[in-house]
Image (cartoon, rainbow, N blue to C red):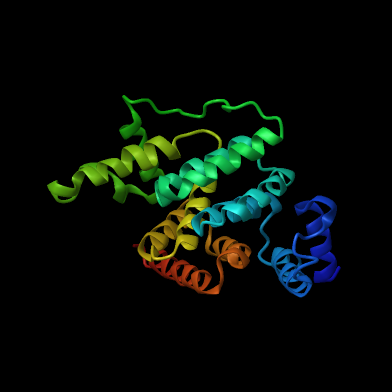
Length: 255
């Protein structure tokens, strides 16, 4: 099967009737973009359809592709992403993108779910309480990043220590401890949020290391970058690859 045939097969899953919305107004663009994004890219890197769909949704959030996100979400469901998983991707994006950027996506995912006949709100996924969110969040940081994160919430200069505490209690305690996605999935989507957002290379390198520590190895991350490249462009994809290489080097040096 050549890339055009693969693109046609993928298009039939992504678009109602298997026809691109740009087929009439921009046929040349529709042809070369879709042959690449739908036919050539998915055949590279060994990433399964569900994982690729989750990565693309996270990347579209990171680059603020609200309309593309809304069009891709039904395809993600067709590839096995569940409503709960889609919601968790959107929720976790808030920790890395801020509510100003995730607000439109909350509306988009709710609109798609409502059109599917899903009853909202979905079942709750929280496992942490007000009493233990800091403790559980700190434990999640250690699980992902290693023993060097022990005591992180109380570390650093006093005037900014509350930010470290928030990272443990809010970013990890409120989000990473939730059901719906496991640590490997959460670190993968975080990697995509940061890669697509751009300007977060120190954090992207750290989370590339976090991914590697829990089993999302260098080859997997390169595969993820490859799959989101058509959605975030070459500059941010190349920056992400540089961060993956830097993370792999640090891991090899035992840092």
